[in-house]
Amino acid sequence: MFTVAALYHFAEVPEPEALAASLRAEAEAAAIKGSLILAREGINGTVAGSPQGVRAVIDAIRREPGFGALDWKESTAARMPFARLKVRVKAEIVTMGQPALNPADSGAYVPPEAWNALIREPDVAVIDTRNAYEVEIGTFAGAVDPAMERFRDFPAWWDAHHAAFAGKRIAMFCTGGIRCEKSTAYLKSRGVEEVFHLKGGILKYLETVPEADSDWRGACFVFDERVALGHGLAAMPFALCRACGRPLSAADRQHADFEEGVACHHCAASYRDSDRARFRERQRQTELAEARNVSHLGPPRAPAASKPSARKRKPISAS
Image 1 (tube, rainbow, N blue to C red):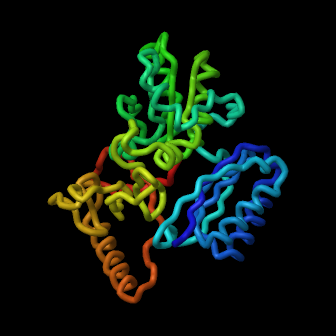
Image 2 (cartoon, rainbow, N blue to C red; image 1 turned 90 degrees about the vertical axis):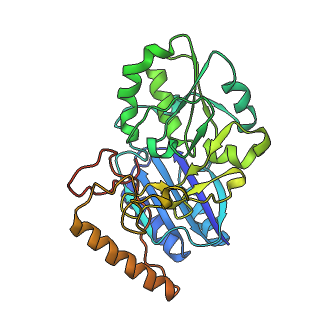
């Protein structure tokens, strides 16, 4: 079994490039794979490997000034869920397009054990801050879906719809908690006084709250080869479309437009014949690699824009 650690922490990083180089060396020495994103505002990522290797990377981060209180969520995977290690420097560790926003002024944390009671209150509006393709396979009962393609769409969505939430307390949630640090801070910057967010995100809720008591419906998309998790952080029966990156249920994979490694019903009209030929060759190489018990697939990518076109659309990275 591999240990998988999802983490984020907001703290000042004066030289993110130098820290990235240091953490890359630490992770490579520990045979860790996954993704780490650094910016002047902090760190965000998910890594996997042996328990000792993951702990070595966590300890290296926590030794940095301002990162001693770093928290992380652990789960396990039967197979390595990442194909390689990526350590990148960006302007924001989660891209909202609001670099001047202060995440320290975020909403009030609500522990998973108290989340159900809050979101069942009649004066509370619950907002899912994830992308539409994630919401499609699972969300909390009664939650509002902003139908976003990217997290940077959230400020414009809120500014256009805030009047519908007048007089409401706002409860927000996301996969691991990082988006809500910024989305709740954004609402507070817009004058919303009572705004809350789920501490540890959906993953902590699914780990903590028994299924019999749960208000969660469906599966939680994760950006690794496990694809989607359920209660107890157990893997759910979803697979990725290798063309567009969307999570597919067993029923989706029975659709007439589905071809393994080539297309699904979400993207079948979005690529040219030359693209599909290239995808078929990639799938053939993947199957040959699997027959030799070696990895050929790259890491999963976030779905491309939802509107199909006749031209090739390159899948975008998570934001």
